[in-house]
Image 1 (tube, helix red, strand yellow):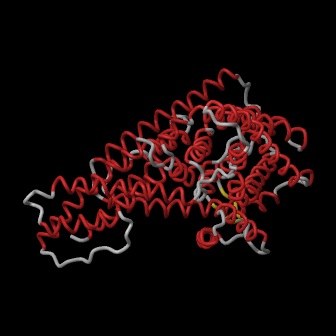
Image 2 (image 1 turned 90 degrees about the vertical axis):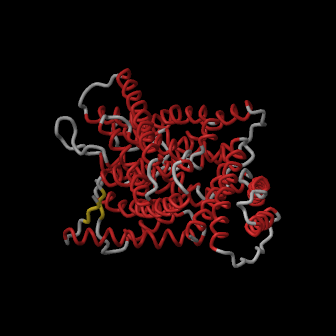
Image 3 (image 1 turned 180 degrees about the vertical axis):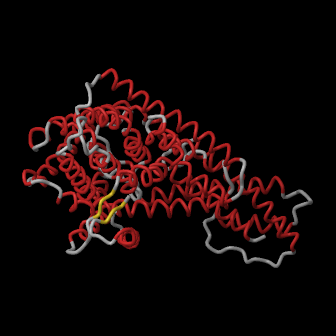
Length: 530
């Protein structure tokens, strides 16, 4: 758990945790208001607080990050992935998730063994820890950037699916460093297959069970509990059979996220959106502030021989960025050439600079065993932990604060008017679909003229993008009931049209989600008007 090492017992630890929640919430709220990347500002705030004289030393156990924080944040990141876009970028994602991870681990291991006091075994551990980009940090940083859908999905998918590779490398490196046995690369390959394959199977199975449960309940409280428990169930079940809990959570999130609109009604979807948003906001805020808060305590555990750790951290961070650039440039050139597009530096530059490290490497570093295979202390563990946290801080601060500027200078960001035009076009198509359906049912005697006219005027006003709405007339209770039933039917038709526009690639996943939420809100208002 989160421990405070200045005395005071459990009450002081609880008070510190509550203080962290308040601090993180205030800083994250300010970051949103000032349009500053929240993870970067939270790390800086945590570091500043930790350097204030009298601040108690804070230590975080691996279970807090790995079991409590990671599953819901990974699940939320996976839910945001567009399945349609993911299928289009699976080849470059596979190359990055395997090849780039191996290359990054090897390069960091080599640089660390040459420049730092680390043995080559512990340098390999450091390389494996920092080899993969972090999905939590990448998603949090990229949430407010207007990246093209395919680039956004490529960055997020790489960070979500490269953890299985780095986890296998990490376990192999730990075996070597602890001298608990020999290493067989064939065994390592088998373990990778078990980790990734087992995680995929369990994640898919959990998603199937959850989908059946959610289809058979309309209780908002039960739906909320199921949604909150799902990532933990996927993670714990996978870890129990020694598969990859991270992969299991990601698979479950991708499968369920792409089909969430089919499971529940509008009222429950709105509630789940609010609850999940609150949980993600709090967990992200606390965990990124903890990264800054724990660094000074980790530095205090170093020996005099590790005094140059800041230079080591900068060298490792520079190595990660350089290897990523050298790997992404030719891959991007091949992809662009195959797509019939002239190769450009713009996309590789954004992909390189978006490769931040964050929560996942920190959790891996914290899980490094304290003792070697013979029971003696693993003396270089503190330096690995400090370098990991330092590199995370450097990438979150340096790349986090400048990523928006890199995207702007690259010229690949979607212009605001492009998104507005796409959304306006989709709104016109939805209103037109509703008007067509209204024309089909308006001749029925069961539909009063006043109700049909009210619906027609409302849809026509939306079609013409008019702000003024027809004044509400005093309708009889029966007319109101008919209106709600018919409007709900029209909303269903508009939802079908929205899905058609998305399936036929007329709109992006971002526009689809925004308009679906608009329809959900309108349907929820109809329910509240009963």
